[in-house]
Length: 543
Ligand code: VG1
Ligand code: CO
Picture 1 (cartoon, protein in one colour):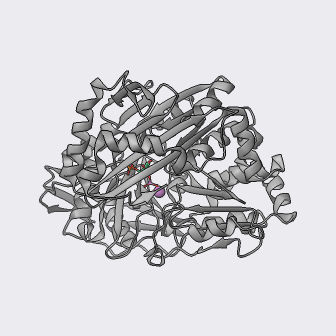
Picture 2 (cartoon, helix red, strand yellow):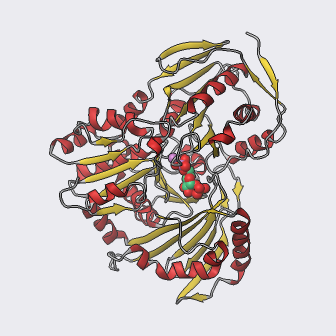
Picture 3 (cartoon, protein in one colour):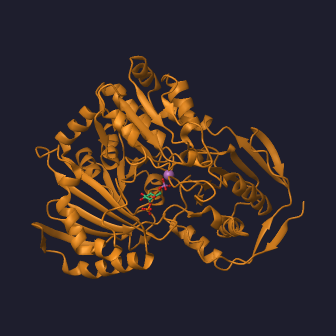
């Protein structure tokens, strides 16, 4: 079959962000937009001739179109095989697992995560390397450089692959294997967790609700939670993936899962509620009368991981993204294990996991995971919680309270200002950075500033440096304010303000979070002038 070389002209806006290239669907539908980006990825890689590429996505609108294009370009560029999930579906953690299990060269993960889908919604393309994790900055920088000068791409004239049928087909000289998207992932979960104990928990009458949000985790949750663990049918809701997520917003937070939250706050509601996002890498955990903040969940999972068979020998270390609360740091200290603070985004955890220096990682944005794959993993977090509940035979609220009693509580909130004018947001950050050198030692609202800087990460494994990863203002009592601009938005800029305050073991553990953080919210406002500059009177989202 003849390989066709098609001339193209570069786009200037194909810079990968925190998690790959994310844009509105109509942007991706422009002539050669997908082709340019995929070819630029392949142009930035070496040594993949004859090797395997994994392709999967969260099933959102345009997923199928992009997959067919990517398969042809992969074949024309000399990959030996593509493994793709049936129906084009693979959750992000499942894709990571398939890459690792079958020793693929790398993979393409097609998703815009928790952002809405549909013809006017968002789409995204991310490249993952052979360890199963998001490509490091060295590669994403090379891809961006390539997109700016690309002048042709390679493809083939072939019919579409039948993504609906499991089995092997060919495209030119390349094999395409359509695989069951759930099987390998479910087998991995069964290795890590005590399914026997969780089955007994459900058999004892424990009630759970899992909201798949019409997104990718539906088939995984139906199989694992209902079929394998014996939870009653109906435990998983919204479990059929829809290209538009049923016109919803598949973001598992208290805004989009408010109904579940309300249900869990009632006495006759279920014992446990959980949800995952569009591509299955985030998680929301709510116990009866207790919402667990993602930062606390990371700390709790790390402290209790040894109760699950996969972590029975203990964990090597913990890593968290810089804006994530320091709750996990206290666990690491008590366990006497390594603790690492990395920039936002899962790609920074890969080296630490590969080097065996950390076992569990997490972000305040509802992402937790471990060395079982190289992505954050929503269902993994839910199953680890279930394993812990089954072994400890306590409710979520009791476990959280005991944790605070032995480690103290880190009150935590994030205020997002979305779709802010980019120039205004950038000026706000630049001016704030300018004020940092004068802040240390000052007393603001009665709190003494211990340090104020713009976070620079030095990767202890490969020696690389990533600078300007977010402004941090730390106070002598352990409180902290962090400001940074999102790297996943598709329209304007999103300003994220992260606020944290520590209460010791014998301190006040029952305050309202926004109230407990009010002084810090005030300091952030007076330092950055958010309201005056953006014209907003309040955040768009509070998590
Ligand atoms: C956000 C979160 C970050 C997360 C990233 C990808 O990035 O803050 O913690 O890793 O999304 O998650 P940003 O740059 O917008 O703050 V997902 O579930 O979108 O793959
Ligand atoms: Co996601």
